[in-house]
Image (tube, rainbow, N blue to C red; front, side, top):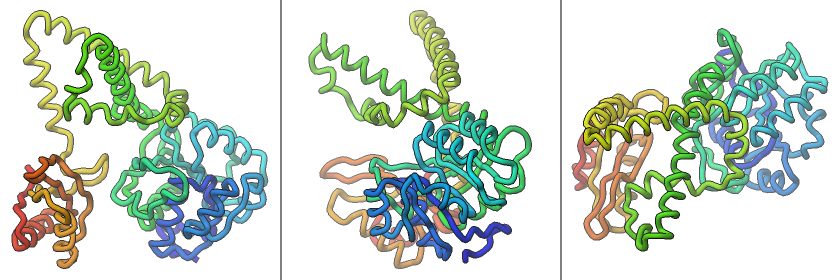
Length: 374
């Protein structure tokens, strides 16, 4: 039996679709000491892989959902969005245990929450979820027990006040996955996601297509594409199948934000022709400065340290080893820039300013230049 967290102590956790996220949930629970039973529902191939990797204790096919869910305390729905909604409708026609908590990992929340409210009986609690993390890998073979550490896990329970049940689920997720939960209404979640995730992805796609069209008429266009262009358009490489359900279920808010963006571009075009974009640059710089530089996503604050590292094999490993020896935990790591043959700059995040200062001392003793990131 698992330890109760804020009164929530599921004994049997069922993961519907044991792919990257579902497998990572299973591994994270096991690594963090969850002693209950984890059952995975998936294809025969994924069930076999998940069991061999230790993601789940038991496996079953999707057709076994009704028999498996009868003994579940917590059910994670880890399919694509439209498949999650179909599963919720299937669950609505089943005999579900009283007190069952159902959650999901979909990237949009409004349509999923509405479907859950329309489908599930009153004695079942549904809490929409969205862990703000991922990987370029797929399937249970890409599962990572550390995938959720320090990532925001948005919880959306529906219109009105957040009920008490999500508090126990949030504490459970934070205890066993290392995430940081944030309760938000579904409408707010989808509006913010459209602004900071969905529209930027479409803009990246448009920028790459613009460059492609220009390259048809002007040679060396792509040869001259520098780091800024590559950084801005990296996400444009994702396949459409990964974005289909997101776009379908959030198209109204995405379209609205695209309209706002188009209006801003039209205004800027006028000022461009008039020869004065200084106010636009100043406003953008001021707004950008308010984005928390010491936070990961919407998570709580962290303290950043910038380290200068030589361009040689083992440099990053040596940095990590020095901090590990001093029992200092790195909350996040990012390579900011690299110059071949010279070296690079690495950002390290720590949980408190005092830990960051101690890390600087340790790194200096190991021969690395480090400073607090302002």
